[in-house]
Image 1 (cartoon, rainbow, N blue to C red):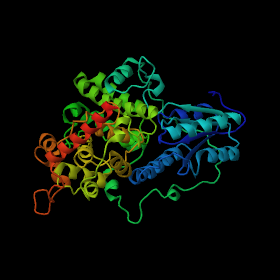
Image 2: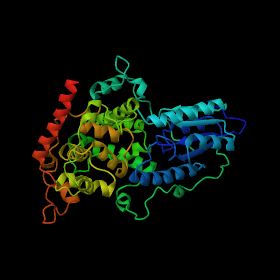
Image 3: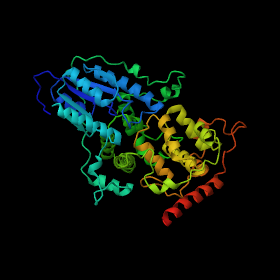
Image 4: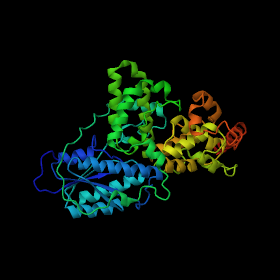
Length: 466
């Protein structure tokens, strides 16, 4: 790469994926600094083996985030070229069409994604291109934070201590102004990708709850740091209070970088010592996101395979016919669970405390395989990503990294009385809660807790005998 303007006119291609922003985008920054004309491309790859297509709610977000990215690029004299197909072959064809000299992108960390990126880099370099990948969407690259034995961490606390002992996350890169572009070949419209629901259009609640795009992401970040960061530590577990950052879909789609979020919170802490403790708790939540991605890097099949393989023997008996459907629809007769599931179906998100409760109820009261819950959340969350979604489900189920102890079963009634004592959250999403139309519980909480513990004890006993 060179910061000097190129004289041959051959363009540099920027391949966008989960980094739908122009600010603090290392791949775009490298292309602009090369002095070459810049071509920005998004490839909808729904055919390469091993890739997991986004779920329905995430596709809705992706559509609107791509529209917003295209608008940001047009404001700088460029635009987004959209193509569809296998990444390796489509990029090879595009580079030939453009007679491109360089290809830049920001890294991904799943197994299939890494394999595709490695093949693309190898092919590009064999063709004589300046090909480079960059760290953009994690604070710490997975190969830089290791145990003393050189392995991935499996427990969060020592992992986060190692991160905090490492060099501080870099400062965000500046937002580029206008930059030269090249004549673009034919591409698709964003609408042609078919990412939006149509028959029926069920996304009204998503539209009411969210405005995807980089500009609104920065508005959300500024609002949170200004208005809510100081009370984050004390109020973040109360689902009826608007005290969380709501930045998870922004990070999932890369409308914000974790570096921007980190330094915004850190600057607030330095400016106002009164928010220091709360800011530290918030930054540790960024740490859990990092830990999930580091775990994915070490366990790329985490969406389908238990990290702790002894849980492969867990029976998952499915004792309650119809319970999965009742859970999905928020009709279990357990108020906090139903409120969370209805919030999810309406807005594409769910309060984090309630996510843990609903997941525990599915796996440890209904004894339904965590993978079925993970798949449902993958399809219904706007922020479902390949690392945090399976990581958190395995954490609750007890099979994952630094997992909750097998005997920890969230009692949804105790959780409701502790974190929603006046019923504000439940009544918002389950207005019939106090009426005759509300269903009876599909299971007895105490009885199913005992059944879950007996099943887990069976697995532990068989493991010990082995």
